[in-house]
Length: 266
Length: 142
Image (cartoon, chains in turn purple, yellow):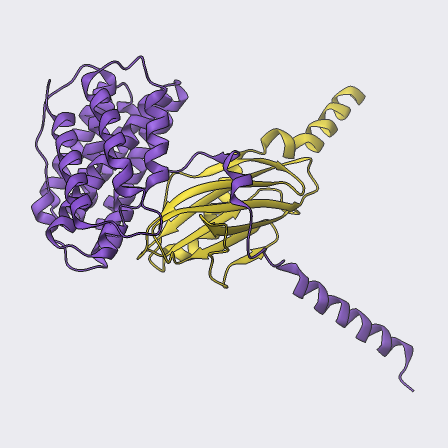
């Protein structure tokens, strides 16, 4: 006959085992998305880096071809500066992909100048310095991290002074530049997997909604972007179907035109 | 003397509520992410956060790219809370790898997207001793 204490220990052991098994509850295999859609939090806009990483995996990319570190004009309108800032930060990620230290350093300086132009220079100075130092050491991981921190710091600084709309324009500028380069690469070396990276209809809708809430930024470039997003949407909102080469080419034309508009005085 | 002692007692008792914040939760989420940085994951500076009641869920939507690999890490500073995070595709189908984990007030989900598109990340405070529990969700990719 088994003593009572052994029964007790066995029972406790079984209970503990069951508790451990129950610790990681199974997630339901399916959920009703329609129910969720109305209560979904804002997206975190992907960095151009995420797209570039996925592109790299599809085959070698000549990143040097896309490096751009021109000084560009100095704008006074804050929405224009915000768009340009996002674009220039994206250029930083491109220069990192190309491992072009000089371009990264020039871009670091440019980012600081633009940040000062919209009144958030103080929060960017340490990041700009870190970008330049990391580029000198060819520490590309650190450059990427500091570019992300730069964008985040700019946006946080803007949000703190209730300039959320400018913060969103920074993200938009970066997204447009990233999409311009993505479509340029895929246009020249088409693949379905490459084209699929354009499948971002919800992100595009997010930007459209944000722009609609900015009527006070009555600038030609903002209106051009709004019109362009309407043009782009059906080209990338294809559900399960593939995005064809003609659509990639068209999106590239549109984003290249917008990119030129962002860096050029009217 | 008695009043001072009472005030001190109240302050100590309320300390978690006074100093708890989404920033604190973010620090815990980043703690969960740290070992993955050494494996090559780039952890984003931007993140989601908020507060939930015990048993409540929240959805965030995120654009993910096929070819990348992602982890989402959830944290809260309420160390007796139990949290979970799960990822679904735009059809509502569970889209995560089986090696996600939950350890009390930390949880993580691993996604290797089969398609580029929007995914829903469901954050849940399964249990908590606090009425409202601050949470933060960060993500990384490689």
